[in-house]
Length: 259
Ligand code: SF4
Image (cartoon, rainbow, N blue to C red; front, side, top):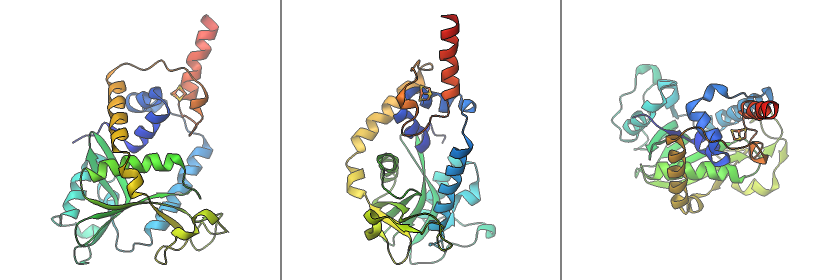
């Protein structure tokens, strides 16, 4: 089944209805700066470093690549123990029903989310980890996690949902992120995941389901209509620099020239 919204589109939609519309209907207009691309790369490196602390993890994306709409079905087959993996991807370890998946896909309410790390407990409940490379919990991280909690918990029982972020600022040979302790987050580190702050937000995220459902309904409504004529403003820069600024500002310039 194909999806309408993803985590990134939802976050975009919270910032601007026009940016959401462009992300869905005309994403080729997006232009990212080199600095933004480097930030994405750093985020991915940090995510890989955390995934390396789960040596038995099975990577759904390695099997399905860019065919993201197939992720939920394969994820369900792994979680239900009915998938026979290709020899190419190895045999899932027999851990008494436990399993770790990377990029596990879940679809609900036309929203597809891919979870960085999902640990299935022996009783079938899930522990979900969303990995962020910043050194502090931001509201944007929480909004992102809240959407994932909403979708995943409508598919499976979520035992707990945590955001993992950098315990340290800077770079070290050990984890890639270990120079200066971030005092606020030291308590979240566990022996199994040194260098990472793990913050359990399960209750806080579960309390936001009604708001998430309303946001999704509003975004679907935006996508049913034509491109919104939202004017540019401060929202174009926060919480992220919008990649459609050149496009929207072009329209403003044309109005100024011919107005
Ligand atoms: S540049 Fe501003 S108005 Fe245009 S899509 Fe981005 S956030 Fe919206």
